[in-house]
Amino acid sequence: MAKRRRVPEVLWRLFHNRARTLADTIISLIPPSLSPSDCRCKGRRCLACSRGDAMSFLLRPDDPSDYRKLLTQCFVVVSDNAPPLSVYHPHSRWSQHEVYQTPHMPFF
Image (cartoon, rainbow, N blue to C red; front, side, top):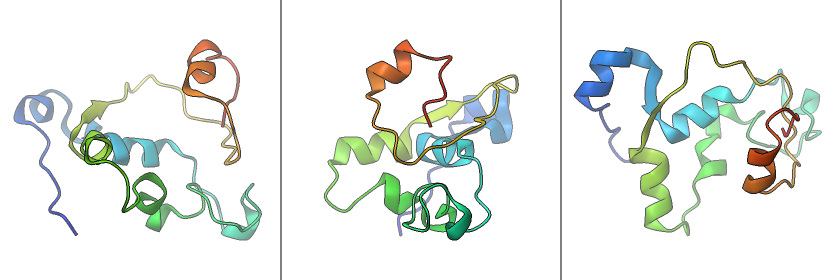
């Protein structure tokens, strides 16, 4: 496994543990599921019920290197005031544009 990249110093000074890679942030935003059988995916395994192996859902061996860099080398900070996701639906087929255009709708 690749070595974990350090948070850039300026982000660490300002945000401490809130500065994380994009991949870690995505995984942290998904509400935890009790078990795969209780998950909305009905045990077929999704990002929510596979938190221990969630990176395999975000990164695959054949993914382009630019995508890998985006998820593992881009650091983001989520506001403390950001509302948590209340619902996660693993079979959402919305495009990124639809998600962006409809922020009030539960897209997960």
